[in-house]
Image (cartoon, rainbow, N blue to C red; front, top):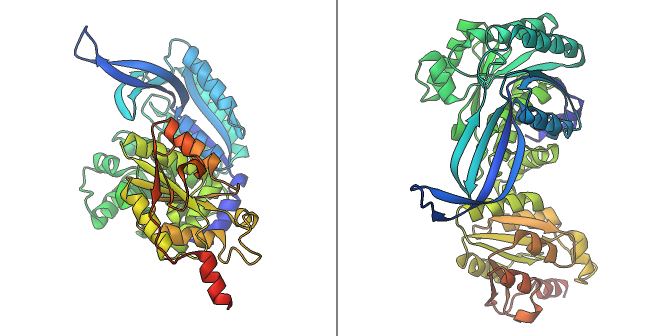
Length: 485
């Protein structure tokens, strides 16, 4: 997998045209403490509201997160939500958008009402009708203008009308005439509208609905994909299969199975957009189809491990490629941002999160015993690990650390008692504790409560501090001293 790392480094060279159904995703967060006296329904006490790009807009978010430059063409209503989408697109530094505002059309809005981690209700407002002739002409003209600047075209079909009534076929023909491959994220069961596309990316359910063929095993999935290829004149199908990974099937019968990344799944929202965006960025950067599919599979594994409609970044993809080659344990080695997302997801599941920290230079029985005690008192355990420079500043000696930070992190992550490892460069883990807000803070019994860094922070939000029993006779400093005798 590390052979793909050079491809990640050049994703910022990608130039992609994305056309499709853009939406505004709104999230209303709060808490439910009572049932309404007016009807047997919960009352949501609203705490905050957020909005982000959805639908084809999320493909744009994913492309810009990967560093690609994007030309985006879509239609919105002449309304406040359309203006909100315009502002959100302006925040995407490497995107240039053409939004066709259509009078009388409602910009698609999906509003999700969420209590804690539980979605109570989703309210949709949208127009699904095909575009007017004038709006259609504007979209076609914007696409025609953008084609010379890009290497790959993405059609993101969410069934809201932009790609209806022959629009998809017209755009595909336009792109093929310009020599640009077309990736389609399809919708519905009528795939004839996508005739001539380079690549279709249906999920398992969509593949079944489009072919009416069984898709319950590798051979049947391949057969269904071949049926789509033959029926609609496309070059290849990448079927996304959730926990079963992906399967790439070409017109010549070649097929490549890609196993799912082995990581904890928190939210599959928008994973299909990540797949399409990564495919497009990789192909536009010079990758072949198998390489692009492999990168897309890795990227999908990253975003399903995050909370909400998320994106991934090149350094995360690179880290995941290294992790897969070295050890599954490395998947537990997280950045602080990733650890915070993981912690929020665990909290949403009602899990108690513990935290401890140290240098863990030479892992010994004392360390293992302390970590086991910590994990026994919580549902998930995060370990803060001193980075190399931090270890040196702690005056552990001129030869310390003996093992580098990544080696120490991987060894720690291989333990069943450890659920996540976060490196920190400060002298103390105070910043990590302030941000992660663990429910349990664990240190050895050689500390006292008033000397444990972060104890007051944890206790202030109702958490607990545990002074774990230490296994006598074990310390890294002692081991190093004995080895030097």
